[in-house]
Length: 136
Image (cartoon, rainbow, N blue to C red; front, side):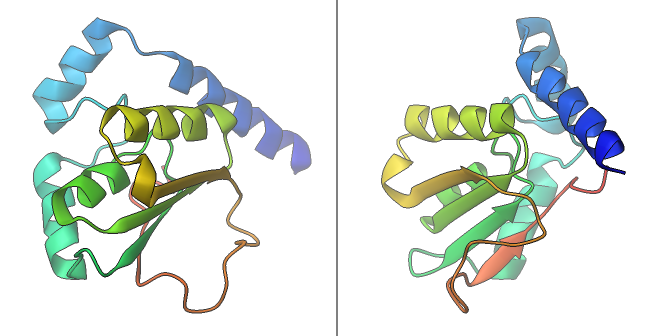
């Protein structure tokens, strides 16, 4: 089982390395985003998630399986919430942190390499969780 998990993490690591402009053009056309996402959540769907969660400047959102930062960073930029991004793949976390920096969100964003088994969070330290495309 550990070999299978390592193989899948390696596969995702490779996918995060792909960021060619042609692929971003496809993402923009299909999803309305430009994060280098490898999932299927559209901008409209992400916006609806943010509305349903009631995110604002007083909330902390956990993006579990955040990858490149989509849609957590978008939701943080749109709502003003604080964001914690966890992903088991270093390349995804690195891209998420770089995008947060580019979007001016580093003052309210924390990203870390973490799997879903044991989250390094205190009880009640987040107000909402998003985990789109995690089980793809």
